[in-house]
Image 1 (spheres, rainbow, N blue to C red):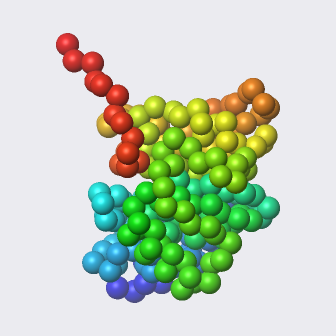
Image 2: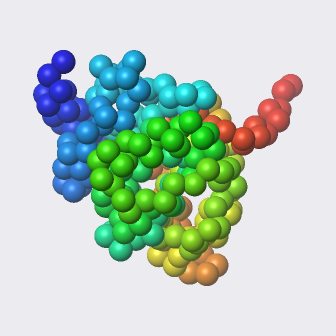
Length: 217
């Protein structure tokens, strides 16, 4: 595989064509080596338009979803960022390159250990990694300027919204298959939030989240 050509094709044919026009995001997706964060068995799929499997039934987001998320969040160099679900560490690396400091929480120790090693290998130091269940929020270091939730939730957890600083942005995917929506929630004041529906997608749920009972006739 010609890695650089595959990376270029990912940015130009998958990401740019999916309404990602923020040049900083496009440049970042072309600079951070995604192939180094992909499990070795799937390295040849590092730039493919597919969800790459991780341990414990988790997956990496599609590259275009990662990029749309970053574009929507508009991460600034001074932002305090919470990532729920460290996973492979790739999104952690992207957030760390854009933001001031990233707090990333992973419920699976093996995933967290792998991500820690990969981040260290790329000298990404403005990240604190924690083991724990952040599916209902993570108050340590709150409030946050940015919250990125990398697994889906059946229902919106208000705890995430309440952990935002004024002006803070939350990216979260809410719903159940086959209908999930990616939402951007902005905190405008102590008591007011604005919600934008960005796109439809499907993403595995966060580990530990209880699925609501489905109504059956």
